[in-house]
Amino acid sequence: MRISVVHPRELGTSETERWRTLQNADPALDSPFLSPEFTIETGKVREQARVAVLYDGPDIVGFFPFERHPLGIGRPVAAGLTDAQGMVHAKDVEVDPFALMKACGLGVFEFDHLLAGQPLVPVRHTRHPSPVIDLSDGYEAYTEVLKQVSGKTYKSTAYKSRKLQRDFGELRHEYGVTDEAALRTLLDWKTDQYRRTGRTDRFARPWILTLVRNLLRADGPDFGGSLDMIYVDDRPVAGHFGLRTATTLAGWFPAYDTAFAKYSPGLIQHLAMAEKAAAAGIRLIDMGRGEKEYKEKLKTGELWVTEGRIARPTPGAGMHWLVRVPVRKARGTVLANSMLRETADLALKTYGKIRTSIAS
Image (cartoon, rainbow, N blue to C red; front, side, top):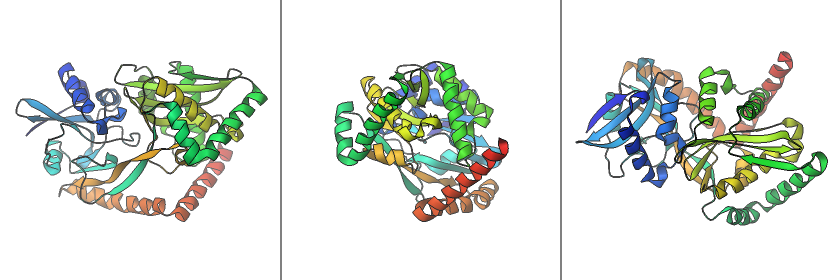
């Protein structure tokens, strides 16, 4: 096998078409985060982005998007943002992960959302569920399942939607919004959420903000940004920005105006989004890894992703182990224990309240 490493901007039309062909041939790879367009757009704002192109003779049999950082540290493209990571490859391809790492100039590759069926998954890793909404039989079939598994949620959300309209006016839902002003409103809500809950504001990083704005304008048959908003009396209440393929919508940035919190606007928006998405041909909404109450209420099943690292015996890999692995193990211990997780979440929210009060 021959491996060539290029920057995403160096990919030609024939390479991107082959990438898409390989992706479409395997339903397990149907995530917009694994689409060539996502890597190419990321490459416009991340100079460290790379793609390893795998050849078997004259034929391209795989693509491995990654970022190469100092000391040979490798991470997924747009690390920290992606809910699906890994190679896009022919089903019968055999890959030596260590040979791939060497060809990419990496001592270690760290991941947290590597698809469970990937040939790169090492022996030592942890598995995590990624909740999904199955729309393959349409929205009505989904709501029937939801009524059975989470009937209280469905009924209370419908009631709160009616009450929201009685209190404030007619509810309007717009799917496939391209207005950047609407996106700014959503991102402002999300920034406020990050600060309230003690999390790092992702949109304080210019490259992330630029990437999201660029992706809003992406609208092809196989890949695009997906922004939708709900309004009452023309006032924005809640929204979501994600990415899609032709048949999968990846949940990414949901947020709402906290002035309407008692009406559960996030749940109202997600159900409205599922209905419009199903009508547009979406068969699966992947809400992404993470312990969130709304995901548990809305899901019909789960996909699986893995967390861990692939390492070669290099000084950079050794340094990475000292710095990152103990922290990841401690984080994993907290997330796996409900009491520790709730305590940590409370501490972050308390920190967020203090930080918000100081800033104001």
